[in-house]
Length: 346
Image 1 (cartoon, rainbow, N blue to C red):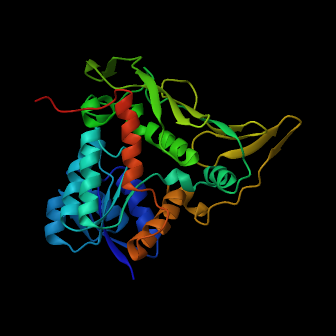
Image 2: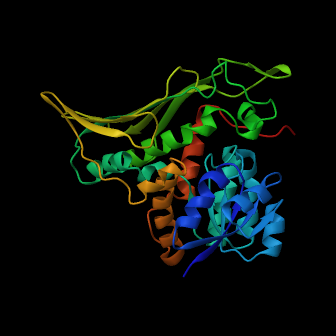
């Protein structure tokens, strides 16, 4: 059996969701909705139907799954609309703009009883999955610290995006706290195997004034964010996401009393993995993802296809290991704890 998919959002939705769902044997992309580029993406990706809105798509086309890849400010409304229509839902990160929205989305999913997941696809990358397996298999004992660091250059002063771009607006879900931090926090939670008992951290706005072709304009987003999580029983995590640096560099590390295991790379895809012991250092021989050949489409496509394997199983059986809405809510609680939320003024 194949499941008919309607995609919401034409940016990441067109570049990653559409090709990944199309390549997967359990899914068939039948529609895409976007207020601006739906027709163009439908034409480029051979998607039969294009609509301006999700409401129009649901009224017109029969879909089993709604894949929400619109900008962050749209996630709450799109997910609630899809669930009210009884659809299975895959939602991009960040899950929501604030904790109240996230709570409402989780409650709606429980009422709907459909299969729901959050697109934390980097769990499926070989290095990230191997780190988890080392914990699960008991090969790393006495874990003391989870280190998650990502340096990037997307929000340096020299970066030029038009002021209308949602990246520069907290109200629209912009900034590094919503772009990359959810993946980093999810990985820390996943490795810890439990939610934190305490959260502390802060964000930094190095560039409160941005510039485009029309001059300067204000921006209220965090371009760097720094978090410390206490998971209890002697385990903590340090998380850094800074998008104002000159380089692209990512590190995931598990530090135990007898060994450290460290993944390193330009980003969360195609990382190298090393074990570091007092008298030895060696590199793991990682098995590539079965879908690795599709990285030429977009780097996220191979792990996204692996996520879809689990999502298809959840739809069919209610099982599978696809990240849950509860996982999205757990990440949202961290954002709330460090003060990065948006609530519309009353």
